[in-house]
Image 1 (cartoon, rainbow, N blue to C red):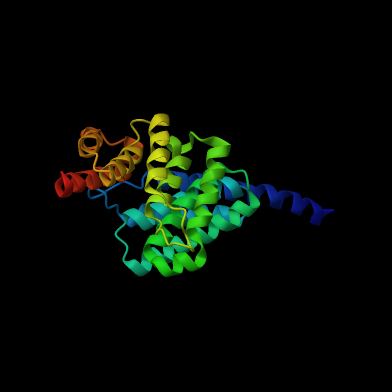
Image 2 (cartoon, helix red, strand yellow):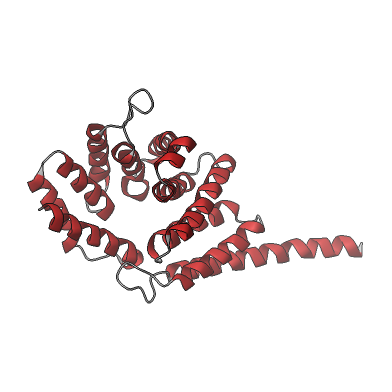
Length: 255
């Protein structure tokens, strides 16, 4: 009887520890922009968030939520903390692997699908064309983004449409191998994202990039200037500053 009673006590304690780790991770994640230099953040807070979410995930009591926040944290670390190429590869490796595993466990979770896609897209960028082509990442992202659109087309400001547009725009069109990527289709898709979230900085940036591809310079300028005029969102400070940096670069280079 004593052993049984100890077991009953152990599980609530384990759940409490996991809950504490999860809440700790969220606190550190919300402080990810502290001491940021423009769009480059100090890595300490996001690394603390990652360790806390990994701890919560390992205890398997908040698996779905811990996985979502951990995927977001991997993406932020890889994008905005000044990592070198090998460090970026290692970070997005972890995000891609975790996302693939969690999609099997939670096949209808839109946040897991979205943040897997964010990590996998960057994985393809930092590993280069041939590893990405061998892995079939473009087709995977095309399928996952279609699932996001079907399940919740409004998530992250039309994020499913935005990802699918990026897949069409950035994937190489190789006859008889990958003949489906299309800039025309990408433009149609990002316009759907813009219709859902017309002020979302990433929607406007991608829309401007595609408008430039079709020599619609005046419209692209309007989109880019709209980004530059925006006040970065308090809860996306580093991310929005990065988009504004990209917008200013495009204005300087093309307009």
